[in-house]
Image (cartoon, rainbow, N blue to C red; front, top):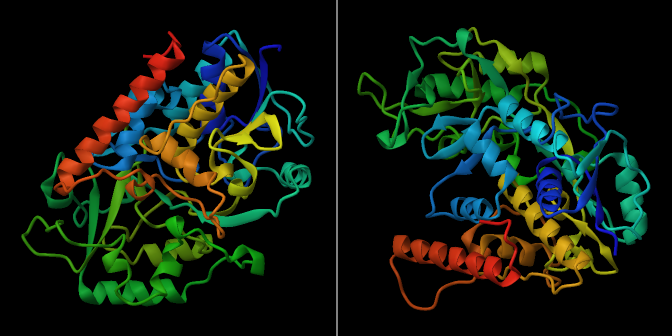
Length: 438
């Protein structure tokens, strides 16, 4: 069998898949429709653009996301390599300069001798050729329709939202203050405190503000990225127990705020700050009017407004197996958020798993079952579980990982789960005999 693979989509999953295959000696034709055709959420022509937050979440190996990152590093993940090259200090989170991050990946992909980049929209994927479809949640309408026709499965969708990004020079530093929650690590987040009166004024303005009109089928919003105005309408104190939680953020004067809006650095120079948890579908004029009610943001300048956009995914439990392979078309694999894994790191990890199994398929070898003892395997098993009747996207979490037998303290248990996962990854590397991997 010819060792050539078509990869559709140069997002996080697509670049991981392309890079891994090329480094294993497989010729890759990587199709990316941008810049000829863009999406409602993309801002640049760069590969692996982070269209929402610039955070790849926690680095702690006491949670599933941190363990997943360790697994990815073992497979020489390009995404992890770029993240560490473009890191922005943000406490225990792995945050990156989004432009530097994407540019680093774009340069690596376009300069690889075995990767041919083709800037075209694919609307007729050929399922008779080895193909990885990694078009992400922003898959074009034409390709989405064709995938649905080929797979003969009901299409699924949900809507996602992104938060505004603020110019630091417009933040009132007489009111905002740097502090990490409970003073853990370096104080890198900017905090805008609200009194009870200020919070109630802001709250009423938020729930009364005009949103961009949605059609009926656009009202299925993914819980993990719910617009702040939708969350607020669940109750007066909902935000105070969510993104505006004040605990551990005592003001420099010693007072405890009633609520706090946190701002996270969005670029390496720390000239831009992301409003944490403020995904929104408010009209642009309303974003300025409402968010300027937050102390410290009275004169805020928005470098990028919050937006809502359509995210699509397939009904993976009816279509894919635990190798990210299409059951009825073994030459075709899916990867990334279109499969129902949710999050930057999860999407990247699925690209690694799908491409490694594509390589094994081309070699005529047994495909790799990462098992639910690893984070990669837990995701693979979740999206391919045929017993799931109401399939929804999911981030990696310990509830979908095989539990440990015995009784352990919470921190000890998480440490043991991490050690077990990394040992399993080492076994996979040893069994496959792939000398490229570390």
